[in-house]
Amino acid sequence: MQGGYKFLAAIVDFSLREKLVHVIGKYSAMPKAATHGHGFADSDILEMLGFSENRKAVAMMAVDADLVGSIYQALDDELKISKEGMGIAFTVPISSASGFCGKLMQFTAIKTKQKGEVLMPATFEYTHELIIAIVTKGNAAEVKEAAKKSGAKGGTTVHGLGLGGEEAARFLGISIQEEKDVVMIVVDKEHREDIMRSIVAECGIEKEARGICFSLPVDSAMGLR
Image (cartoon, rainbow, N blue to C red; front, side):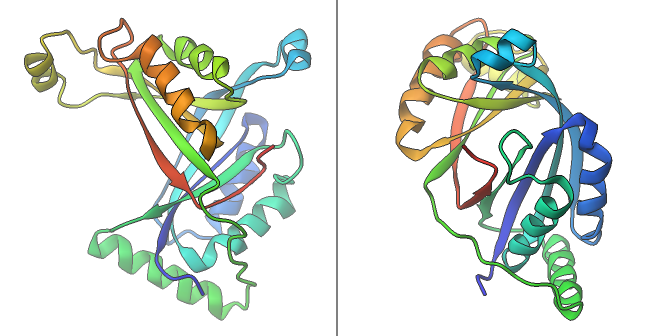
């Protein structure tokens, strides 16, 4: 038993969105979100075929750490996510959760264990990191190119709205656009610094992209190559 909570994300081709929703629906008591995004891959063959960037289904949820193995198994059984090109799933440690959120996760863990599902612990720790770059909408391509230059193999972009733009504008003396591109890239730990430096150099807060970049430790994953 690992204990604690994890942030779990699963990213698959958009055509598999219904199966993805079905899998995470088995853990319906847990807080979760689903959205769509666009992926990029560092593959000459994919680029020749026009598939270097495609639509993705993205699921995100908070989960009891002891359930990660069960969710990975379900993702592999129904979406074959461990096979190359089928998608990626990963977890990031959660340091704290609100009381209500924590109670929901504990309730789901108890109900799942009562069903007799196999709980499989993560197989490795902190060999990868999740880089998150947040830039003004329309600048995701620049982030991707900068990341590729330093060894990133792929990533996913989702869209959102920035908060606190007026305060940031007063502090930094620049205009901050509300609409944002959020680029998520899972990388080998040893490549993280080079990739982040490249992103900041091309898309940092003083550039047109007005970007910020940070990383989080990935303590388990499947589908990485």
